[in-house]
Length: 151
Image (cartoon, rainbow, N blue to C red; front, side):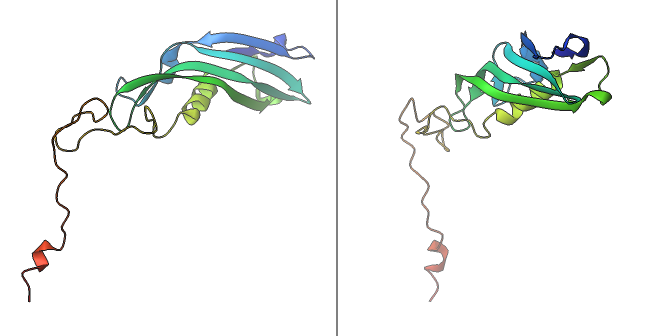
């Protein structure tokens, strides 16, 4: 998404558009993926020789739960966006694509879970505990058993 400096007007330039999800460079097994176009609604202004861009970003997201490995969808809605740069160091336009990409990545949750009470996977058989009840017994936790024979 480019802001052309010759299009800036005193009251500010409103730029609205969509960026393709491919700008995120996501792999298929990433825990968070953009599931559609990234919608940008921005306002660019020249404030005392500085380019100020403010606005909001929105995008549909697809998450992979870190507990049960299932996928779920959500929306990143009205993420505040801010960019500034001195106009003297700007050529004829500013490309905000990489900066928007970084703002999106920073907003992603570090540990996405499908729901707060997700039970995850059984560590022994791998069954999704949210969907089925497995018959696996938890391993016995007796760290001191080896010392019981000492006298």
